[in-house]
Length: 547
Image 1 (tube, rainbow, N blue to C red):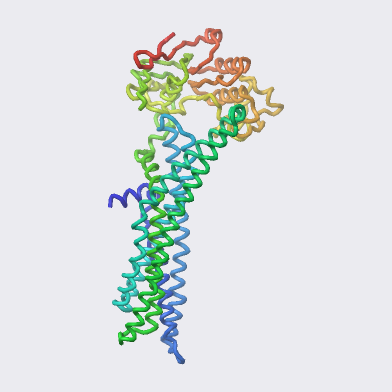
Image 2: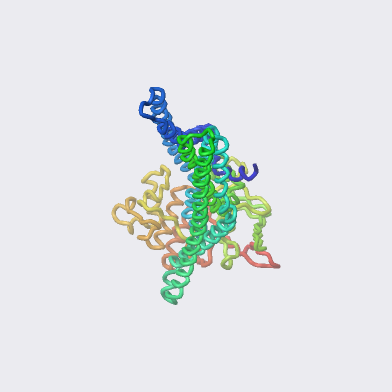
């Protein structure tokens, strides 16, 4: 029971019980197909030279009314299945993405992309479809078995006994199928990782050793495709053995039925024909059910990974709308005895710090020491291991931080494919006048032509320079009217001239600023009254110290 519960949750949790009951009823009706067709052939086999009206009416009723009901149920059950799969996949992907971007301390873009593009598709094709097919074939097997036993119990029992032969391949090779699926999943993630490296580091690869690196990619590709082939071959092997044994299960009972007629058993040729057809509703569905079980097992690793990711999912954990607490703008950030520990034994100690909406802070330290982690803690993207982070709003109430309380500017600005106006509004109702004023403040209006708000940005801002992208991100922060701006190494990839333009645009904004910086301009920091903090390593701990 526990295994079945783990199989069902969370994969059937996002539709109502009523919906599932109706779908199950339709599946049961549609699974009567073999029984209805077998009965129809049994009736047709009884036609002599002068069939009676009673037989004709039975044929019409079975062939039109009952068959029509079966195929109509099949039509609506397929539509309901498609709708259920669509809703389940949509919600599972939504939860997986939310959990990945908010609860993981370090995002693995390759793994997320691989899971969404490949493993969720495997879940759809190798879990949902086989799951419903197993239910359908199980019901068909039960109904066909009952029908056969009702015609002749002994011969029906013989058919059922022979059908057990088809179980053997699945019983003997089930673990091998799971192992081959696990090997493919690992190989696929490795290939996606190498492909990502190739695309992101193409310039360096071309500069140093392109053939060597593409050889690495090809090795991973060959391994991934070979492991996928082996997984499919293993499934085909099981199917082939099941086919051979199913032929024995077909022919054996027919021969025994003929022998029973010759020995005077009360059974007719019409009964044998009907039972032979009905046996296809036992042996065939039973064999298919085992095949679908094999297919379903190929998703065990994928489902375990998704279950582990979503086991503690709570919708409230991902509600970053600060209006749920209090819409009043924050005026103070309060960090009390804050530290953050990681599994790598790395511990970042920030301690006590209060940041007012008029304060300007710059945070420095070596790469990887924890500067960006501090911004994630302040914005509520991750939680501290110890201590508390609170936001004091205009009503002097202490509330938990959420990302929408801040204007966050990353090192690589996020530019959507669309106009400058759409990039500034970002789904809000900010006026065009406000957006144009923000562009003017960051000195972008002259660079974007006569109609800057309608200037079209390509995906990722490919048609903008790095400095223009950062100033556009600063303009977006200005449009948001946030009291606090969190800037994460926004000039790391810019030259000195562009860096100065970005800094001047940022530092003039009427907001509290917390900037993570590897490079900085001492003169500008003094001009705009920045307080300098630095992360240092002391006694195996990372400490934040005021400079």
